[in-house]
Image (spheres, rainbow, N blue to C red):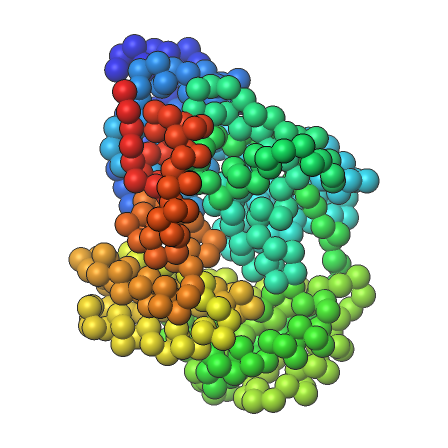
Length: 456
């Protein structure tokens, strides 16, 4: 391994090859604290050429690579299983000038979402995807996992924001499709294939990102409801009556109580309620009155609050956005990001407590998500010793309801044994064939998405 370390140091410089345990530790454990492993070394290239040199050095030695962005993943896909070289892309932070006529920009894979948002907004543009980890999550990681976030209702997931990509393949060759053409019908869409591939097919180094108009006027409403079924029933009215709607977020009483205890927030209403939906509208002109009028006509709303100024909007959003932080502060959660057909979301919420209690009766269940997409974030605290049993019962219930075992975080290492619940044997075989064609030795993120098959 000394030969490999020397090659890596030549590729990126001594100071960017970390072998000391204390220096590696922050990279070797995921954000939740649930997944960890030991990397042979952590390597931090600064550009595509250095990524190529690292990949070729590892290929020469037959050493697998784990690719990591901001390390905000929740399924163990960016941390080592043991002995791999961990390739951190956080130094790939080049940001080019915004192409205003095309509403596009090219950025390095290590640029954070927050950095890109600030860069775009100078030109009256914005990023279609937003999420709470905006100051840590990198664009490369978001594309690799096809991240969703809170604006999917309006703009779609990360794949819809990508106009081009550059990636280093397992043999050190480079695919570069950064032209951003609106029409280009010349064969297989390799860029789309890389989106959501979780680093198993290539290492994303640059992305050409589509931007959306920045909408200067916004209003936020918080609705108190009796249950999830009521939230689902309101959606057709909300979508029809609020063309400016960009977000519709669901959380429940237990989650709100946890957030309030963690962050010291006041209650949003004089009374507590079983379920809450947070709405955001954004437009060129003030959407407040339209939002107020529509909310006033909604049936079965037990209470509501509307905020138009920035401080008020942040205060209402805090009840939703601080869920993840509050959950992590309470312990190491088993986090399961799933989607079911929208009509089945109330059934999933209703059946989850008893299903989980059957295999782990002492755990705490916290649910929240993106109601318009039928996307529920299932968080199970105090389940460390029963993680597999909890995962199995939740994912099988989702499969029974014709849902997906992963909505926006990917499969990672955590869900590989359950991939067959959402993909047929034929589909998995086809996916493995693509993996084998682009990475025949299985050196890129082995054990992520598909079972590891590293060959000499």
